[in-house]
Image (cartoon, rainbow, N blue to C red; front, side, top):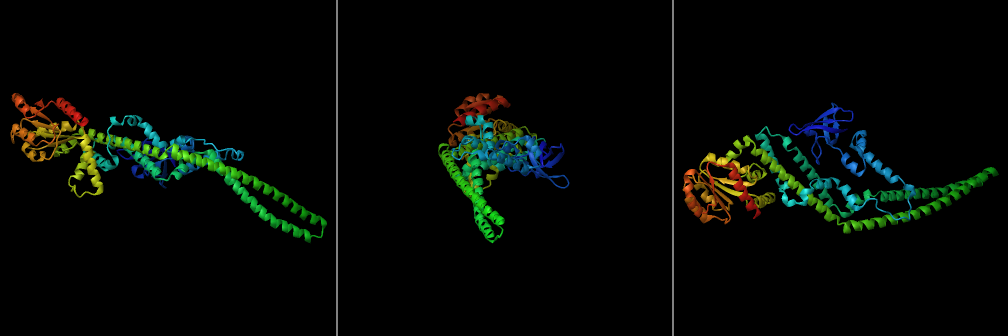
Length: 524
């Protein structure tokens, strides 16, 4: 049956469809059987119901595609019971167009393309091109946007989303519905373009170009009809020999002159018809020769243009590259949305960040959780690729911050504030400053945030030690100083402190300073 989605709730996974007669059907996400899209309001769908009227299968209708390729209208959609009938109608419309003017074709006139290769490409990849135009600004200035590799990060995005939804019931699936719809669509479009890249060029030439050439298809159909007629005439000539012999035999046996003449007249008529049939066969063979010659020339001309002048393979790969870039950008938006929602969630603040997480609540933190217990020397090929991707991503995007304060409340406030400033901050903190000394030997950190109120050893001892083992000459050291210790600035500066921040904590000042330093590090 055909219908249109009038409502769909991402949180409940329940929606309603309205058919042509305004009858409403309810469906659940379990009935959705379409790999290329997810249900959304105002989508045209093809669905099935059981004997009780329950929707058991639903998918997006082919109406949208057929409206581009075959000129199918919304009236056609509603007047057809389902997509099979709609597709038959589309085929019939194309057949009618091909049959129009079939008998007026001039066999000596060369064939012309009624659609250019560009137009055919746009029709065949209309969904992909529509998506590319939608993100035109991104493709013009890609350096302005952020990306994450969606195929690699997909399961970790889903883990982060699931954990977020389970931890905070005020956050629903609806926050992610548009993003996930877009990613599902992009996956489908990329699968199709990859199939095209892997398909041999001759097949693609036929599917993309020749199937859209009405005059070419009309000529091929005319050849088929001419051949069928020629075959029919040859059979008639073959049968005429038997008929002539039969009538001649009858004429010999006839005793009545009038009957004998009738049989002889029949022979003459058959001979006359046979001569006409032979002439028709000759004419049709001549037409077939010219038509086939035109078809061959047309195919050779445009196939050469298709593979050489147009550089179709390069064009396919360019569209694939654009779609992959768009998908990776949308994946970043997905991750950014998870992070933003998590940072505004008290449930996440009270549960997730209380466990001394090194990264913010996002997909990359869940990737780190997955990789952490694995032996890095014995990783599978897939895990090795994930690990290498994480390292390259952190090198490009992450800022490593060592936070040292032995006041747990103050440390927690700083951590949450920093995680809320940038999704890709990595923050390492220890209950006591002395506990970080062995760890910091093997790390190249970008920012050291140190509180003057550390007790396990003096701040002077720690800074001297840090200076002796520091692996990053560009590291920035920021020191929190309370009112009582303001007089120690000169001595602390001599030990490498770049900037002092007042206590109690000024949130906006800290965010501003850290952001500036982080941005400077990323530019380098």
